[in-house]
Length: 457
Image 1 (tube, rainbow, N blue to C red):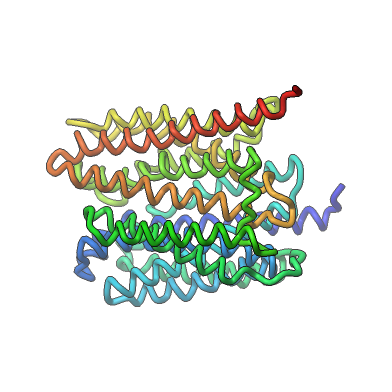
Image 2 (spheres, rainbow, N blue to C red):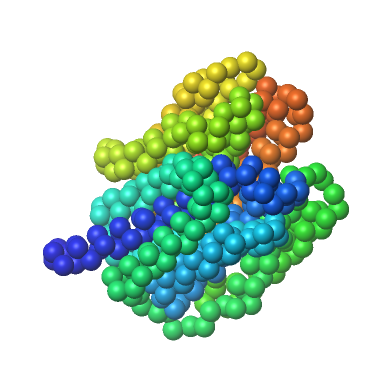
């Protein structure tokens, strides 16, 4: 039974991790409501716009697995603090940017910083919480994801009206610095793994993910030889990475984890969540602004019907019946997301914005349950000394899925021309729903196969 000082220390850790995670998602959503102002001020090209939207996801996806390995090897607290400090520097550079290239690079580095926060933040919770308390802590962590998405677009819109698009970057820098200072003493230290970090594996994985995410970004502007070559380079690098990981003593990702049905199921569900509901929700403010002429702040407020409900549902998920297993909670969340996504088909042809609310609400409830279940599964499906690795793998799958889903949605909507809403939107909704359905089916098939293997012969 933990003593009162121990409970207080864990509560402080949970508070700092939750606020830092919410800040990561606030920074992630900045372009959703500021991109038009940035485009006018810096005279961005279509390619630069795509890269600014993709810069932070690229940095996160590239840095998550390495951040998780660094945290498990050298200390999760150190990597968490390092991530916040990197975010401070990157946000200052973004605020001072006078060209699209500088802003793109700053967004990528923001992603690298937030990778340390995301991977080691959840890892710290897995380190200090166990059993039912861990489930409650990861539910709060999941709620912080939704709160960041809910607050981000609105805060960015307010800052935009008060001090231009740069203002939100200054807020991000100050908040990250304050959190780093507040976290110096309270966060617990973790036991170090007495092995060297797999430096070559880190380089191969980061390069492979960078080529993959870059190819997906380039594909938004059309198919050409360049993204195809990037995809081939990515495949070669990731295959080389996998061969290397089988031979090193302290791998970036333990490939034998993929023999565990719970780990594979959680990773697949995270990927499907990113490629499905998260990617289509990312497009909602832009579609509302361009099709109905809604202002950014109002579009961000409408999105609260999804993001705010996600927060409430994630917190309420801990009160679901205990008889409902973690696997069944994930399935429930994914089925709900599929239904909510299909309701978004109502946003076609001539319509008024309230038509979007049913789909946003249902998706929000389901996404909250899914986030809470996935956060718990990410740390439960790996050994205790590798909790940052489990968190990193889960979040990498989510970011990679969202990059693919956003690319597909953006291409479908932009290629529809004047029928962007009635045709392109419907196609984007169906495509992202397809990702959700496919992820659910594969997960169920894996569970069925695992159940057969466990049956006595």
